Amino acid sequence: MLDKKDFEELFRKEFRGMTLFAMRYVKDHDTAREIVQEVFLGIWEKREAIDADREVKTYISSSVRNRALNYLRDNKKFDKELLSMEGLMQDNNSPSDTSLEITELEERIEKAIEELPEKSREIFLLNRQGQLKYREIADMLNISVKTVETQMTRALKHMRISLKDYIHFMMIILRHGSG
Image 1: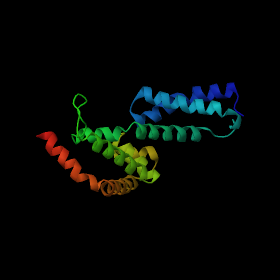
Image 2 (image 1 turned 90 degrees about the vertical axis):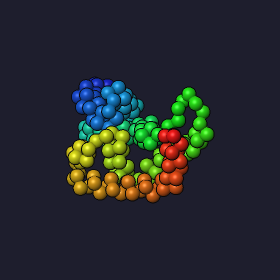
Image 3 (image 1 turned 45 degrees about the vertical axis):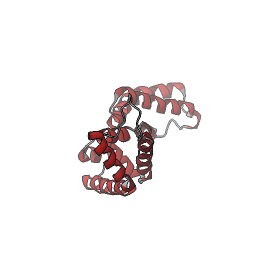
Image 4 (image 1 turned 180 degrees about the vertical axis):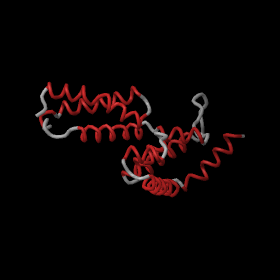
């Protein structure tokens, strides 16, 4: 069981490093701090089941990583950036006939990302949302750059296949949006 003293010591020892670790994913200090605080809150709530003598740093880092990836997914940063880059985000001041289609496209992008195998999804999100280079991802995950390249190739192929039915729609919106 993890007592108050052990928890406080663990918090002081790991909080800063875990916040920096979370920032590598979310690129925002306040969000990273919030993620780490949530992880520690969860540890405190489950303290009776945690063995203070066992290595908890691995559990903490896995929890922080998972929460950071969930944050990226839940906030649809990739979807908004992609749609914005492609000129698909509607102007908030004017109603758009395509808002339903855009919502459907956003949902399909999110679904395609969720369909990726866990490792491919993690690498894809780190690259596209976290804007990390392949070398940075490889170093962070302790894998080779070649593995990152292979996983990204698979992820991008999956995204192309999953979103192929929306290419025509995106081209129509781009044509009308730029005219």
